[in-house]
Amino acid sequence: MTIKKALITGITGQDGAYLAELLLSKGYEVHGIKRRTSLFNTDRIDHLYQDPQQSERRFILHHGDMTDSSSLIRIMQQVQPDELYNLAAQSHVAVSFEEPEYTADSDGIGTLRLLEAIRILGLERKTRFYQASTSELYGKVQEVPQSETTPFSPRSPYAVAKLYAYWITVNYREAYGIYACNGILFNHESPRRGETFVTRKITRGLARIKLGLQDRIYLGNLDARRDWGHAKDYVRMQWMMLQQDAPEDFVIATGHQYSVRDFVAAAAAEVGIRMRWEGAGQLEQGFDEATGACIVAVDPRYFRPTEVETLLGDATKARERLGWSPEISFEALVAEMMREDLKEAEKDALCRREGFNVAERHE
Ligand code: NDP
Ligand code: GDR
Image (cartoon, rainbow, N blue to C red; front, side):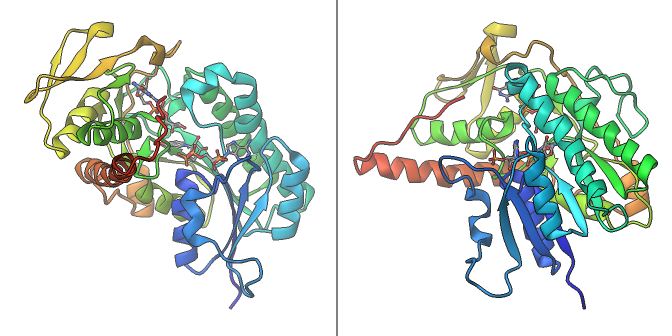
């Protein structure tokens, strides 16, 4: 039996790590592209590492970058993957306002570079392509809930770059017959979520407050509403989309929506804190009802020049056509994130008690 080969860009990220685990469990040979960094950046996939000296390796990393065609073409030529998952991106919406040109290059043109690599190498009939599209495409929403037919209205340089990536994926499917699909994924989180996205910032911050390592979390727009799922459920769907007879685009979402404030309250409840809110807008504060301490405050530095206020997905097509539905609830997601961040905070607390310096990291 021939072993299927998958290539994942963004393998060091949240989704890349879960997808690599899933594909390895299905017997794939998994190749990943990581970029060169001055410090190790493979924390999320270190448990999958196999020595290059080992024969019959099924997990192989390559150095490359979405802004560097030559590395992408070289890796594609070497691997000749059956499935190519494009998960790499400058994925932080707020950062995209600070680095708009780089975001366009890596997230927009980077996608084109991969599709061109498929064409240049004559892999149009071999390589199936998955593009990590996003609910941020809907931006200023025109319809509730949002489905595959809802018009796009992007509200950030990140979303505009991803809009280009979405359409170039559709165009290469239609123009060259490449099996190329967009997964329009709503927010998905996990204990592996980057620390500067709001959910992880909240669970990490609350764990540290609980253990006396910090006093307060500073957040931006508490009214923003999101449809939050678990990354594990969502990578399963990424794989399913490439197993169909014909390529199509799918929305992936839970169909439930919560505000940032709701997320704080749910996470706080996990560590036995009941929240009380006072004030509004920039002056709003969240208190630990039992101690009276202010543990959440608004800092306008985290407001975005243009905000996506509300997102709610309709994944009916994924359910009806592919039999997909999320298995992990919002409550279970929050509980898992809190549990894992408490363990991390306990390590820092232990170091501090033993007299070691623990760097304060906030963003
Ligand atoms: P992460 O930010 O956790 O991971 C992004 C990955 O891309 C990392 O491996 C990062 O490398 C890599 N990367 C960034 N820039 C480059 C570059 N120039 N060249 C090569 N690699 C690069 O994102 P997620 O795992 O959360 O998301 C995966 C994809 O799905 C992204 O494209 C994101 O935009 C999209 N998406 C995510 C959603 C979510 O809620 N998580 C929802 C919808 C879409 P490094 O580790 O070195 O930084
Ligand atoms: P988002 O995720 O922008 O939806 O993009 P993020 O967690 O950054 O923000 C969600 C909402 O929370 C509000 N918010 C804050 N956000 C951050 N990061 N930090 C804060 O302190 C804070 N306070 C309030 C934001 O304004 C926003 O409304 C994520 C990324 O994974 C994208 O790559 C992906 O495409 C989309 O999800 C779907």
